Image 1: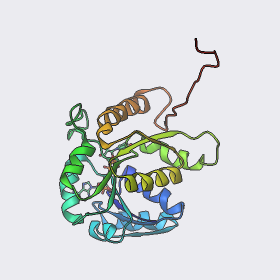
Image 2 (image 1 turned 90 degrees about the horizontal axis):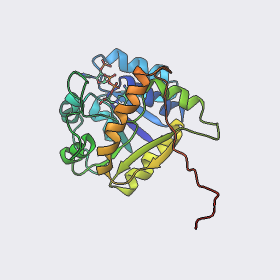
Image 3 (image 1 turned 90 degrees about the vertical axis):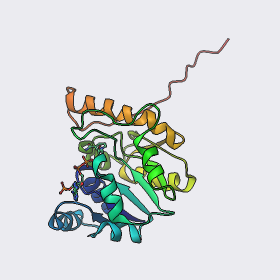
Length: 219
Ligand SMILES: NC(=O)c1ccc[n+]([C@@H]2O[C@H](COP(=O)([O-])OP(=O)(O)OC[C@H]3O[C@@H](n4cnc5c(N)ncnc54)[C@H](OP(=O)(O)O)[C@@H]3O)[C@@H](O)[C@H]2O)c1
């Protein structure tokens, strides 16, 4: 699959690298230096190259939006028309200081993004995991018990594609429902970040949902 990375920092750089290593064709775009994008493409050691946001989106089956909330308009302006494209967003609608969500409860960053690009197939994914965990999850992908990763969206094809990419990174994709569920997933991402960055175990943290059905007979 062809994946365009819009924002090649901690999340975009690592996810693009993993997806290239997993066999996808990746274009890294949107960083403050062209050299950084070229180096990412070289180091990915897969089918990866650097480009402009427009080039990253042009031939892509899916793009990953991975910029700070404050950069959303800028990167989308540089990307151009995303009609019909699957747009995975890991972006969280944070204040400039990264201390609070600026959208919550009655909407979400993912829903606001979908309003901004109404012809695109927006799926919220990868927003509930710290970047530090990504390479470890990929390396552990052959284990039977994989970490969960919630995703949500309103477009069936977009969600199918997202689930495939989530699985390729090494997670067990958990379909959380329509895009409005990002209202719950985005604050949950802050809980995960709290545990990752303030907890005792360190930031290489992912989560797993399991079913625990009682064997006791119901009365
Ligand atoms: N980091 C995490 O663990 C994590 C986890 C879950 C969700 N998120 C969310 O994912 C999104 C991306 O986070 P991140 O940590 O990957 O951010 P990041 O490391 O800051 O990456 C953002 C990318 O945007 C580029 N950029 C910023 N300003 C630019 C400008 N003026 N012109 C061109 N490029 C510019 C940066 O360039 P440079 O590479 O040159 O800096 C970088 O490549 C955010 O919305 C965040 O809330 C992050």
